[in-house]
Amino acid sequence: MHHQSPRPTSNEIRLQENDFIVSKTDRNGRITYGNKHFIKISGYHESELIGSPHSILRHPDMPKAVFKLLWETINKKEEIFAYVKNLAKDGSYYWVFANVTCTFDESGIFKDYHSVRRRPSDQALRVIPDLYRQLHEAEQRGEVTASEKLLNTILTEKGLTYHDFVLRLQK
Image 1 (cartoon, rainbow, N blue to C red):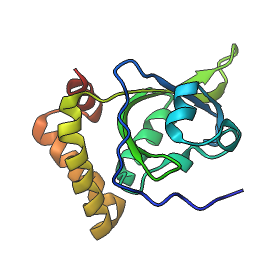
Image 2: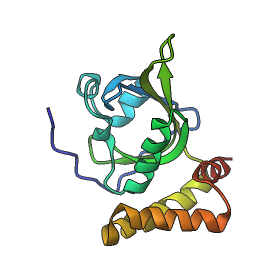
Image 3: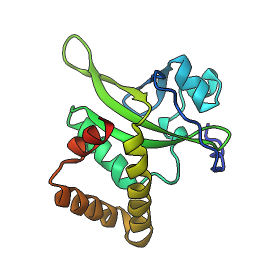
Image 4: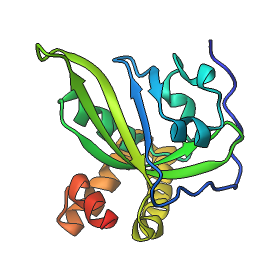
């Protein structure tokens, strides 16, 4: 069942320092578990979240290039840290610093995705929204490849991978 995405508003929900948002999704990106912080901040009832695609929380401001990088990384069975702007049911937004990993069963078979999200650092919140706005604008002008190129140029100038860039911002 697919429902209408909420209309984004300018209302920001800020995570507290010790808020940890945890969720699990199956191989197809459908939510199988969310802790109480995940459910509360999303504004959805648990019954609305379980079985829904995780993209129910995707904010239209998020650059596709960042999600592409995220999926490429976790599909290689590597963990990723990323800043994500999420959309709550009421249209509010909230920034998270996400760590996404793959879970495997005893025989090493890929089982599901596990994501732990917490409040981004103040430094990250000064840098990331503007960077993502530039990437999003590039995508609107020239598809996801334009955004990827811009992100790679910025990272190359800094001499950093996305991984090192985000971890440095989070310090």
